[in-house]
Length: 231
Image (cartoon, rainbow, N blue to C red; front, side):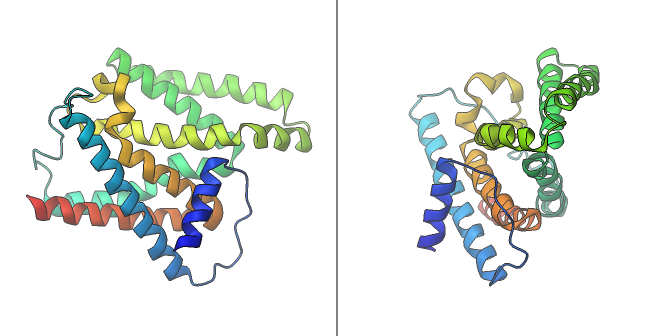
């Protein structure tokens, strides 16, 4: 466990493109260790967020949509354990190994922000235009040379990796009824999602997408059990 923790923190200090092993030794053990680290970091980050709120260092975010218990228990479990890990890993982590996927994510983020700021759904229509512009720039500058493309990608990958985790965290502002209005200090309310986003990014890059999905699912299952046991 200690060696895995050291490996994670070493990687997070400077993320880099890696090769996924064709076969992971002791996959179940690795999965449990990563899930435990994810849960531990998530709880620690959640405690820190609560301290900031209770100490009035940041404003109270108001009620969470989860507090209302309007979602049936089994519906919540299925969504959190089966649906969300697959969709969120495909959106946020799959693109860590796809340059064009990164461009698609940037376009999606721009559309999401514009829709949230304007409080409209039609603002998402800018996504295809942003993607087209960025893809054309990529196509006529980097795509012509594999060496130039990967050299550039290696240089920006640390930014891409951390930005992905931040965006993953900020998307979870939707857990609060006030949502986008919390954005100026948004990351302080979603520190647990930021912490697990970084670990899931490490998992995706070093073990593969199916491992990040599995760890994400175990984390959400644990969270669902704690949430519905507490109420």
